[in-house]
Length: 263
Image (cartoon, rainbow, N blue to C red; front, side, top):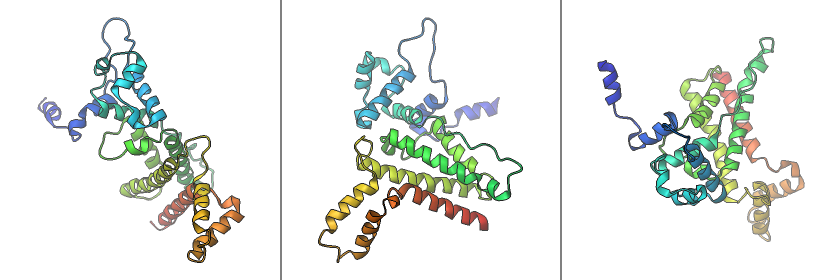
């Protein structure tokens, strides 16, 4: 009994973010007696998510959410204390369920095929993460810094770490590998977002950069011969475009594979 009291009295490491922990990991709804209420935490979060997808995180406010739902602003506070907790819920909803892992290893597969299962899983995970950032670019600014991760977001980390569980990497190295892969995907997503690549008329990052460099290098190629040669090569071989994502990811995976072979 004393041990239970001690656990209850121990302060949360999340400090003033304890409210987010309760909303993300505790009971999301607070059902009472009587008819089911027209307003719910899920509806509030989905409405906020739609506002962010349409106009960025700055477009999200309790007043706008209330107006969209045809409720008073004060009625929202019965479900969520403030914007900090709401953003935590939005992040977890935007992340969604983590991608399914590849089928389990088949015992009769040759050794190299079984050993490469982690690579297939981590590649699929990275591409799925890129799709999430493309659908919800506001995540790039919201999912940063010390904060509470929800079950969906933590599930993504679990899926990636699980892919590396039997590779010989230590626990710390598994986390570091996931951080490197996710950092690569995030960096490219930030470049795409800064170029407005979420629009239907947007071009690929390589096309935008190539056009910009061609204009800057006009009459100046002799000052930047290496860049001019690289751009000319890209223009001559269209298949070499759109390589930033796949090229970088595959080189990261190559590096991990090389490290594993000597680990």
